[in-house]
Amino acid sequence: MFLHIPYQAVGNWLSPAGERARLSILIFHRVLPETDPLFPNEATAASFDARMARLKRVFNVLPLPEAVARLKAGTLPARAACVTFDDGYADNLTVALPILRRHGLHATFFIATGYLNGGRMFNDTVIEAIRRTRADRIDLSDLGLGHHELAGIEARRRAIDAILPKVKYLPLDQRDRVVAELAGRLTDQALPDDLMMTTDQLKALHAAGMEIGGHTARHPILAGLDADAARTEIAAGKAWLEQTLGSRVRVFAYPNGKPGADYLPAQAAIPRELGLEAAVSTQWGAATGADDVFQLPRFTPWSPSPARFIPQLLGNLRRAAARTGYPKPKN
Image (cartoon, one colour):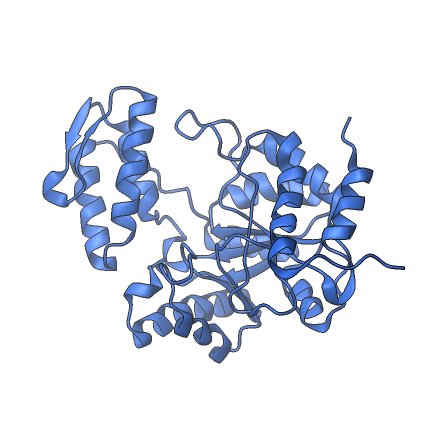
């Protein structure tokens, strides 16, 4: 039996209402219909449904813009949380949205606009090429990506884990060339062109009442760009979304999102200058009223067990409390 009442009591202490509140912002990318052998711990419809059922019993789930405004004003409810998704995968609409609606929950979806309508993110080109290859090994040393065994699912998983961090930090044009060369060497099969949403699917997500946020156009590592290029990427994604949806974009997520490594402190001024209300990183933690609303932390429990979902969220709040000080008990 899921004991949500004791969890609520712990949450009330770690994240009380008002000025001492802490905001838990969860991050997801995909929700798959079924388990993918290459990614057995990726969220599926069943596991996401179980997590959302637990989340709504213990936490007060708010739209991100509302939560940020109330965090600043000191009026958050106890155990406040937000659900966010990055990138713009089609399964956000087809799989995640029905689950969110069934539980009466709101989420924010950060969209990398350059990959919609048949595009494919660089990481998925690598993943899908390795998934489809008939090769048992591949030498990519001339591309700076090493030599990899590919015989079996585990070997392919290890190859993906080794290749993606190296590809991710390449300059944009070089990144595209390298992953195209990798895919051409690994397979002559067509790679999927329906992983990301279409414009119509994005509009349907927006029409369902979900918040749509910016995530740049081409998902670059902003820390590797100069100030003008970084601003152009953020502004281009925001402008496309606003023109397409006829609605103001209010929030932003930094690609990859690690402060200092993936975006620079000075770049956190760009979303503010562009008229956005808040931005989120992937720094673990829970936000407090003292935090910069343009560098809000996010955290998602890593355990594949739904039963550990709430304890790990509370553990994140406990770590945040240890850094900032526990609320004093009321007399």
